[in-house]
Image (cartoon, rainbow, N blue to C red; front, top):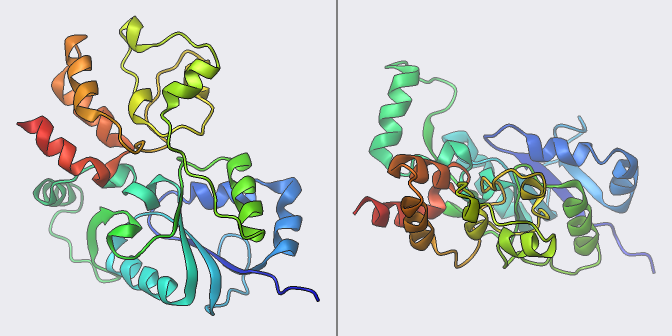
Length: 257
């Protein structure tokens, strides 16, 4: 007996839409993707979108407006499984780096002044799990092609995707790279989730943290290590916050003390 195809929706909240574009970049596999699953909604790829019940919803982008909140709540009601894809969805993205609400309001006013928003009210950028339960996370800024295809295949077969519990440093050792921290270069490899293959360090470039914070990362230790190497206090904090957003809010508070 032939099984029904999984009903999948791909949604974009506030962000650059790079993760959705990455899925479209799977050009050789795109037809197979649409044949293997019932893609109910994918605004970037099709016009006949359906807002029905879903087996899996893939959500990219941060929650940055009241409209985003409404759409996200609706997606959660309709989907059995919700997957946060990309760092905007996971940690708030670069637009979520202003963890302090007062700081966010000040920066917002600098850009927009006292203009009244009529389309939708802006809110401080946050990851989607600030509003709903998220079942799985797919890191990256943007996500990677092979990473997505592996994830997609596993989900079709009913196998949960694997987590990324190790930092980039582990992949650096696999690739026999010299440690950039030992060379006095500000690298966030010890704090960043692995899975990218340490591609930046392979090309002698420091890790900037675009795969998001690794679980159990020792932020305080890294901070003091970089301080000892002569890096400026604000530079360190800003580098750490770029791709980790609201997830390091508590750490930021400790670093201020």
